Length: 178
Image 1 (tube, helix red, strand yellow):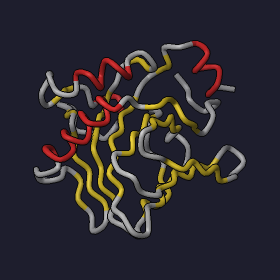
Image 2 (tube, helix red, strand yellow):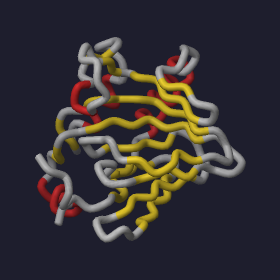
Image 3 (cartoon, one colour):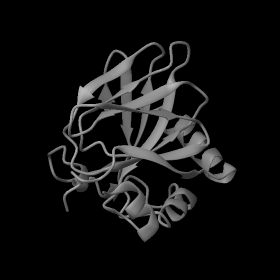
């Protein structure tokens, strides 16, 4: 499936408190481990792994623990199909993840703390589209397009995100596809 004609992103839904609590507790537990991606200002922890030695989104299919995040997986399965490449990330205060585009699937981002961060996605005409990410909401982001993340000047950005293959709801798909 091609995601070229999909909109750059937007708010998907409000996230229920029980899901936010599950994700926050899991973040606190899981991020005590050594990060799978480590930079000076940005870290990622893979909640799913792959037995294929490449970095293609769709290959991250093996949950490290099949029973983790059951409520979260059930909740988001009403919106999107095939949750894959589930990760946690931490962006240090005052930093950003620079423009990149190597992903083959769109994502859902769930901010896990109150901080000011923005996803910036360039459309096919090179225009920047700004999507502020707020705690308590989940966001569709088309990261198959050139994108970056601008973090909060005063707070680290805690985030959960995963890729997906399609929307379950036809109305949601129409909202985000042209």
